[in-house]
Image (cartoon, rainbow, N blue to C red; front, side, top):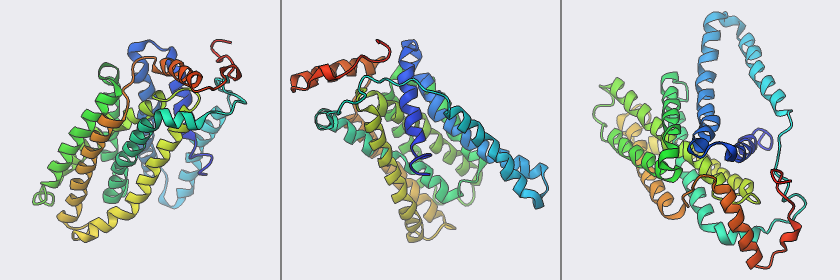
Length: 317
């Protein structure tokens, strides 16, 4: 499952971002975000609401019917994946000069990997506190993702990611300061927590995939995206083990101190991630993948790589 399903987001994001280079410049990143991160967040909402509605309609003693009906979306997805995708084959059967690519893009890859590792904690905090079962709170990230999608082209993925992280840090610190009111004002706490999660998708959730794909050349962008995404999985793995211990150290999940401590840490990590993005991640422009490809080819020629080995891209063949 890890090799198959775990690799699906990487394949989808890389192929989808490549196809969006043909869309008008002022809408490329918007549609990229809507077709990837926004759809993922919509799936989270649907995955909570649909079983809930089915359980209300179907008798509780027939929950196996709920599982059977849930098989339908998986079947549709499997059928769609059987369709043939058009890939750029210019680097097919060519030994990719990974060493030269790492030498040129190591700073950007390090920044994206660290950023992805830090921003993934939002979903871990969510599952730690709510168990991932609150449909109301799950809907907030979807709203933030949609809003960010319509701003990403005007402000740029890097700038929007930094703004989202800084706003999320401010909200996190604000929730952390609500220690004495969390127990008495649950509604206000839930709203603030939803805004915290929404900002996580508004900035880093939307922009990290765009930056990971479009800041690397065609030859290695799938590899770089995979490495950055794996760093995010590592961050999630660490968070799953660390956050429950932090809650226990501050008094447990039933205490205000145990809950708000996570948001002090979350706000601090968001601020650190904003600094990492600012100093290490390269900003992108419209049609940046084509420009990056040309720059990378020139860099390879300067370093003695035989460019005659590379075939014509599929859109030029």
